[in-house]
Image (cartoon, rainbow, N blue to C red; front, top):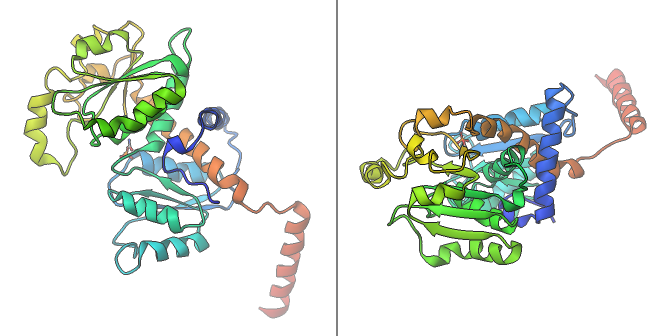
Amino acid sequence: MTKHFLDLMDFTNDEVYELIELGRMLKRADKLGACPHLLDGASLGMIFDEPSTRTRISFEVAMTKLGGHALYLRPGEIHLGKSETVKDTALVMSRLLDAIEIRSCADDEIAGLAEHASIPVINGMGTYLHPCQCLCDLMTMSEHLPTGKALSDVTLVFVGDATVYENVGTALSHILPRLGAHFVYCAPEGYVADEAFYAPARRACEEGGGTFEIVHDPKQAVRDADYIYSSVMWYDGFDADREKRMRDFLPDYQINEDLIACAPAHAEFMHYLPAQRGFEMTDAVMDHERSLLWDGAENRLYGEMAILVKLMRGRLPHASAEVKAQQKALIETWIAENL
Ligand code: CP
């Protein structure tokens, strides 16, 4: 059965650690100018129905560095879901490509592609989850662990909306407790979902021994934080809520110098980006020496490379040098005699 990358929870803890280690190895190799062409000749189709800087660039550059190729496909410029069903697009793409990455505000479109494609489908962000960002954040955290701690015992405090609005928060709230770590949502009153929404996080605690909690006092919440995670205060396209969200989040839920003064001296600051400077996070925190924002953005490349290698490498045909030479000679002879 084709393995997709739709939800990090579809992968065991061991597989998650392997992906992190692979990402770090590829990063080391790339920094030496020695990135191996593990996906030589492979093609990735990238469908984006929403804007993207990091996800788009990282997947395209990842494919190039690994010896493959990526195509940027915009709904409206391809037939997906309009003059062709999701199923038919999946069937055609499966014949022409080696994998598909899709960002869509329709989760059923991502699921539909995965259901019908016989090649790996990667969730490049849906409304519910952002598993690529989540994996890359774990990689960044693994590179910046507090002294004496492992990923399995860190505390991440996510300051912001604790509902489905935050697909990165949702993804992190599932995987961190399953790894044994501690996830804390610090959200304003009114930005908490029904308890059923948190069932996967509660299950993850039982499976992995970590903890999950929702609190409302930011200064208390960050007291034991190893990482303070911030997210956009409002999304473009949701501007109708903007004034209300600003009233509800500011000033208490902004990551600023007053708030980080309440955290341990080693606490580091994260944001999946793009950020609205001066709203959810001040310039001083974004550009702070303990800001992981730019390392996190860079790691999108290496985390994405690990995902692509994990899903695609074993599926590609690998001809021996002898078979390659044989095929080349056959084709060249035919061309010489016929063209
Ligand atoms: N964090 C993230 O997914 O960034 P982009 O929207 O720029 O891809």
